Length: 124
Image 1 (cartoon, one colour):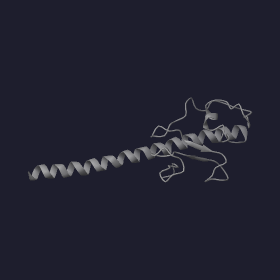
Image 2 (cartoon, rainbow, N blue to C red; image 1 turned 90 degrees about the vertical axis):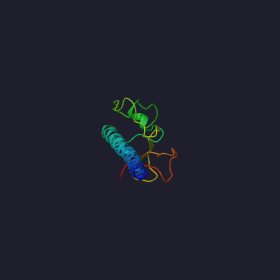
Image 3 (tube, rainbow, N blue to C red; image 1 turned 60 degrees about the vertical axis):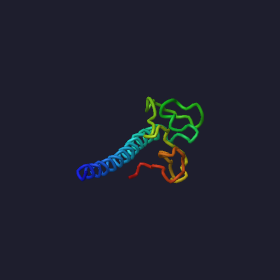
């Protein structure tokens, strides 16, 4: 009985450690996705002199915007936009609310609700 108890304790500790690994992996994926999107946004801005508007959104990296400001030089920079680890679209705002001089780009996090405490800005 003592041996079984020790095994249960060891398994419990191992399972709790593995659960945290999943959270770390999701956070690292958000960081990588946001960095990839930022790179493409910088390329878009360097070709056109401006970032897509909030209305155009990140979709401007996939399909040419049909509303103003229209890019003079447009290239498809993504075939499909990445989804965050919880299956939601990344949030993009230009001008930003948090970054008033630039744009906001973040994941709404596990609750899938923007502007809540679990938002992930990819800056861990």
